[in-house]
Amino acid sequence: MMHCAGRYGLERNLRGWWRLKNANEGVQDLIGTNNAGFVGGMTYGTQGGRGCVVFDGVNGYVYIADNANLDKLTGDFSICAWIYVDSLATDFDIYGQRVDASNQGRFYVKTDGYIRGYDYLAGAFVNEVVASSQQISIGAWYHVAWVCDRDASNYVYVNGTAATLSTNTYATTSINYAADNICGGYPGSASYSQGKAFDLRQYGRVLSAAEIARLARIY
Image 1 (cartoon, rainbow, N blue to C red):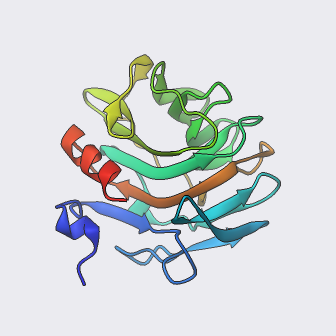
Image 2 (cartoon, rainbow, N blue to C red):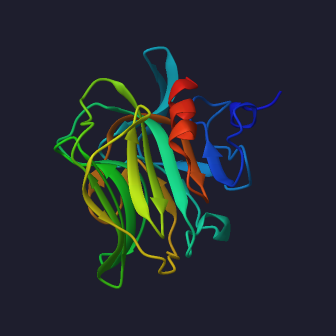
């Protein structure tokens, strides 16, 4: 059976795809070999009829081992997932890598409910985007996406709708963190997400607004 990524023309340059729905459709990379794993208090569950991974907010997260296929380098990228936030007492981390305080990439919901993404190398921002609309509320499912056209602009989408941006910087500086990719936590900063997620994807290209809208309608 063809996956929905293929049916909707969304398989092109898909670098990693993790359904994170249940034990059968969980940590496997459906497009490659970058299988994920659980750390700490991670479980599978359901919310509103949707299978998902559940983050305990204490020490649990999903990790994907560092792999050259997932390196951003100088290319464009798009990262998206379905998320359900139970608490914003701390940031809700969606996807990122962290070598140390001066070298890290992060895509997350801030405690004020707005989305931020950045790449930070040698103590300086390479890419940074902060949304000032499309606020995330506790207790609902959202499809969220960060799209980075390294020559032109960043974009943030929530449920298929583009957000207004208060910060929008970008560059073609090569990005290659020697660190695992993390969903649901930010080890080293004592920040762990409280909530749920499924259908995490990383693309090595810019997804169009129409493609993001399709992804937001699939489930």
